[in-house]
Image (cartoon, rainbow, N blue to C red; front, side, top):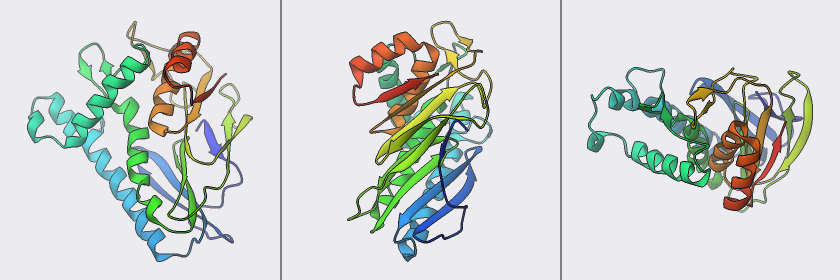
Length: 252
């Protein structure tokens, strides 16, 4: 994990006006951290709806499940008009991401297969977190394997979450903190998962240390830009400044 919520409560334990829930989904631990009126019955319903959306996303987009709609479409077993509409929505977003980043982010895979999963996590968390926005009197932060989305429920002001950015060269060491009230933060690098990020310009996996963290209004776009800055820090930084100046970055 490359970003953590500092001073977070223990999972599934209420401590004063804080509560957290954890689910293993999409191949990673996802946690929902809540402050405020944490005993509202609507909160438990909303959290279950969050898990439901994420499990459905996994069924549609997983590259590890042979029965996912993405893999069935790759094999030609699922006609586009019969596929879940999420697939076409994400396809459009991937094209937009490639254009915004000047080609530093791409859904191309091995030059032949379409792989949108580099964008899906941020998109999925934003979609799932819509259910939390309807719960009155709370602020919340969703942590999906180190990528985070913060916001507030109905008639509530977002509170501040302190996010620790881990040193990619020293596991467990925090090198910076980011105060996040609303929006997303994402980190890209090889420290946790190895050389899984591919430079779309060469088709070669990037095998170097370091990381790129981006935060701003949307987790989806923070995630896209974190990938672009890790692929090529100077070119990515220039593209980010020109296309999305509302976002901030930290390249280590």
